[in-house]
Each structure stands twice: as structure tokens, then as C-alpha cells.
Image (cartoon, rainbow, N blue to C red):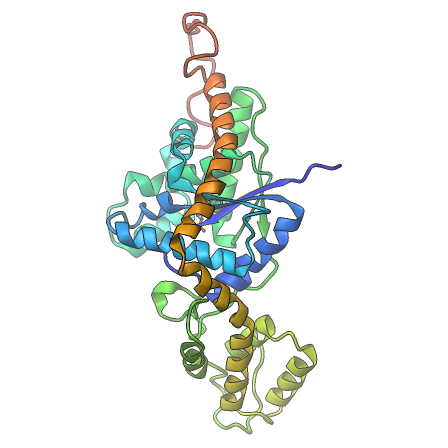
Length: 352
Ligand code: TRP
């Protein structure tokens, strides 16, 4: 039997998941579980890089993210769910890999530059080394593929560079992981900007049907359309982006688009129909989520069981890396090796 490839991916626990996560990533992850051996990481250490002083919020977000993942169909029987901070191997590997990367390489990563602009703060060492920790997350499990959004591509590229550099310097150890980009288009927020928790334009998986309807009724539509009888634009209209994502009735979908284009259906009617479609699609997810969130101890147990399973893989990789780098005890007398007169390994340069 052909061995399945291995995936590692994750989210930072920055609050409950919204429909953008469902359409953009979670539906895809649920499918990938059938084809790959999947490790799904709750990257709570990464949250600290921008917000380290809200302990209660990190903890509650962790459970909410987990409940949302499970409610969407991430299956702890098929996949391994990991809490990053519970496995010190993530941090340990990151510390080792940090030596293979220059500061200037990290300073040029676009997400870092953006964060500095957004935060209006002096960047911390933690923020600068964010992508090194992410590389450790991926390499610790020797993942072959990493499903991520486009914004994460520079981090995957760095991970590949680190893997290559490690393999060349020591012995072939890590696969160079491929980014897997989702084919689903990104779902816009209700105001047609990028959907983002902090923009107040998201519909959360845990929102009530009433909240959802209210949000849908306030959605941005085609601004060129002044009357219900004006011809409307379907492309670039978030109401139709949502309809495409959530309405399984393709014949109805085509009919609504055709009528909208010729001014035979008003925005208010469209939004009422959309609210029903979205609420119907979310109903089973919400029911499972409510059930899960009621039992936080069970959620913790699921995370603990996955993290235990991951520990075996993580520890094996970490030990292998330590031995190859000449670290740790237990792999031969420490006096055996001699430092060469001159370092044979260039310390910097390749990625400068
Ligand atoms: N940086 C990712 C994000 O913000 C989260 C993340 C942390 C991640 N570690 C990872 C994603 C490893 C993929 C693989 O979305």
C-alpha cells in the first residue's frame, strides 16, 4: 500500500472561527483528511508574538477554535490535533533552526513588515522569529505538504530553505514541504473588505441564526444599483459570493443570478433568501459546536490525546536533529568529536 503523504497545518487561536475560515480552509482540511495523514496545530505560541498579555483570551480561544474545527468535520479519529505550547519540542527545534537563518532574511518577510506597520510598536524578537517557529512546527513532523492561504507562502518558502540548508549541512533529514493552496476563492466580509475578526465584518460559525440574518441584511451589494429594477452585477458582489459558497441548489443559483442581472429581483429579496441559505448550511455545524462547547473537559481530552500522539513523532525528530547537530547526551562519548581547526560550514551568506 502506498504510504500517505503527511500534512501539517494550523491556526493561531485568535477567537472563534468565521465562515471565511469554513469556506477558505476548513472544508478543504476536512477533505484532505481522507488523502493524507494530517496534523492540525493550534498555534498558541504564535499568538504571543502580537499579544502576549491576555492569558484568559488565549485559553478560551483555544477551546473555541477546537470546537469550531470539530464541528466542521475535523475528526480526531482520523487526524492528530496538537496544542503547540504543550509540546516543548516545537520551541526547542525553533531555537536550533534559528541558527540557520539570518536576521536580514527574516526582516525581509512581508508578513513581518506588515505587522510592524499595523502594530505601531517596536517589533519583538518573538515577532521576528515567528516564521522560524512555524518552520519548526512543520519540520518537526517532516510534513510533505502544508495547506495554507497565499499570505503564508513566504513562510513556507523559508521553511523549505531551512530544510535544504539543514539537509546540506548535515544529512538528508527533512522533506522540503510544498504549500497547498486552496482552490476556493476567499470569502469577502459583509462589507466586501477582507473578512477579519477585528474588522467587525465576519459571520462566526457560532453566531445565532438571528445575528446571521441581521448581518446578511446589512451586507454590501452592488453599489451601482439604485432600484430593484436596475440590472445588477453578480461578479464582485459578496451576496453572490456567499450564495456560491453555501447554496447547494445550483439550478436556483443560476436562476437568481439571471434574474439579478436583468433587474428582476431586488436586493432585499436576495438577502432574505441568502440568510435562509446560510442559516440552513450552518445549522448542523452550530448544533455540533454548541454540544462541544458545553463540555470543555472533553475538548481538553481530545487535545491532550492528539498532543500525546504527536509527542512521539516530535521527540523522535528532535533527537535525530540533536544528534546530527552534535548536541545532547546518549549518542556516544562527548569527547569523541574534535572541532575542526576552521569551521567547514559557512555561518551566513546563503540566504543574505
Ligand atoms: N502562521 C499561520 C497563520 O497565521 C499559523 C501557523 C502556525 C501555521 N504554525 C503553522 C500554519 C504551521 C501552517 C503550518 O495562519
